[in-house]
Length: 348
Image (cartoon, rainbow, N blue to C red; front, top):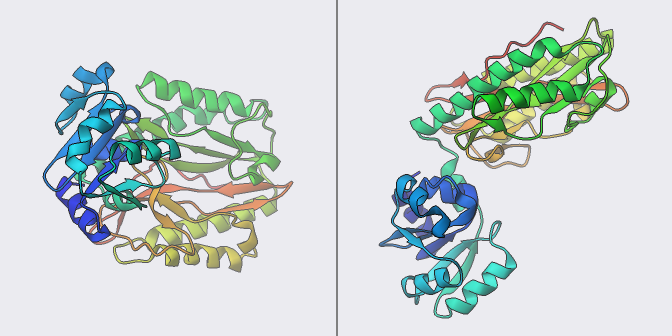
């Protein structure tokens, strides 16, 4: 994403300038790696990173934008002249009410316009550098999963598997992209069943949903594995989810509607009598945030474009019985797709 692309989007949104406060958007525009303590103002002529004195050297070394070092309210005072008489867009999903009141106080001659999703839409298509960064995070996650996989056996706590994954990532200079999900047996019916102290048992399926955050970029992957021999019903569920997942991955290409991918997977699971057990959307974009545009859900208006990185993650969840989710990280290429996650899918 470039400043020029953002300026074109601003023009289409009817604003002359944009005040950027969402941390991932600040980083995307500026390159500054501590974006929670930064803001960016983009006008027709300038783009400036505002941060405070703790980051004078860091901002200078990292940011491709000119920097102003100041704390609010001086920040707003220094920017006031640049926005005088301008229509200034702000990120409605990121700016607090208190900060909005500050802008109104210090920028009385500006018209403040709430905007949603402007930068997120531009971030949906990744540069080659960003694709490489996400791939590096996913490669590390694959290694972390391979490290922890031998621990998934009867008598081991879910928590110990999650801890092994986190320790591996930390030792490699990364961290969890989100709380590691390790959901065994009946807890597999919880799509977001973060690891607990439950002891895994023989004959159970275990769902592990994990990702790495490396140099600011995320990965996301889920595998469901077996301890011993699960019931015939849970094996049936596993293979139904695997069929839906593989079919949806193979359908990925530019021009495909995200909603149609969701429907494809949902129809397959419905054919197996598991339509109501698929309790969430098919997937989402991944990058500086672990959940980004596009959204692969039935109501989505997003269309796949080359350079998008998405998850394909159908699941089926049977209350008090168990569940299955299988998820790959997928790059949309010029003529199709490339699977970025390489951990094997086991023959349950």
